[in-house]
Length: 97
Image (cartoon, rainbow, N blue to C red; front, side):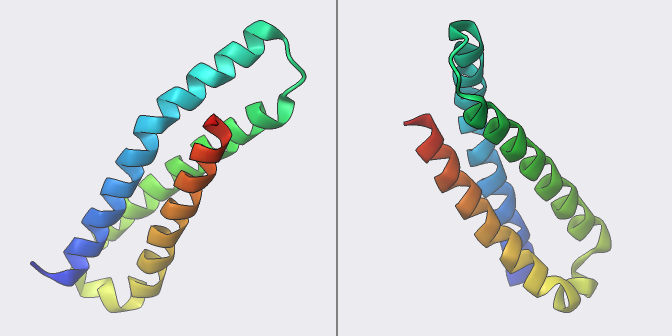
């Protein structure tokens, strides 16, 4: 398989993995609201993570639409997106503990 397509697919997998856990984060957010606990930081974090995920999804869609012919121009961005997915995912797991 073309390594360019593999990289975009890997980012898709990362985003889906984050989104799977995002549901847990939403449940945590609702619980915090119900408890009326002063945990605004966690609520803000949930919103920030959601915004980052949406931004990554838009970027991956752009990569797919541009096609592999622009891969060399975007390789660094794609690699950074992949690393960013990993950072968001580990941050999300820490918040859920």
